[in-house]
Image 1: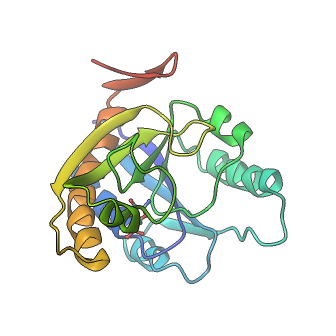
Image 2: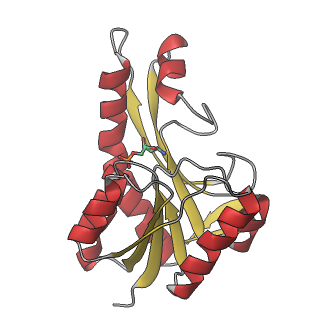
Image 3: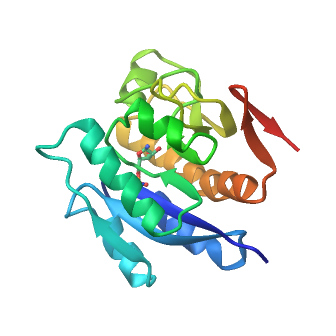
Length: 199
Ligand code: GRF
């Protein structure tokens, strides 16, 4: 089986990274590099424990373009073919998004295009939505606006707290992200003229 070389960008605990790692043994992808902008990101240990190369690239004191250029250099040095954002808390420059167009995906804890941006679960609860979910999408320059590759839906109950709802969504994220990455790695989905095209 041909495995596409994947780089994962994280900023925090990396539970989605953990699921991508757990699923890779019989998958058409192999995570070869994990990059964090924070040196205390929990996901770094998950990667190291799995024998995956890690790199810390701090963003502080750098322009967005300079930081992204360092990311790009590291990813290319690792011969990375697909980049996954997994709880990566930096907005990427337009140039980076364009350079990796069609090869760059993110997981977002809402049913996009609803609830782009931060603090999704608070806003979903405040709006008394009856459902929410998670989306894996191609990254384009506009934040959380790229075409969706896969989504999973969960109910929202009237008495849900932030913790309860985020845990319910996270559970489906953990199944969704490996499945979506598999589709991309097998060329079963492509970004064409701004659309996710399947088949
Ligand atoms: C997830 O909810 C993901 O959807 C969002 O950030 C969170 C990352 O969690 N983009 P983890 O670091 O993967 O545990």
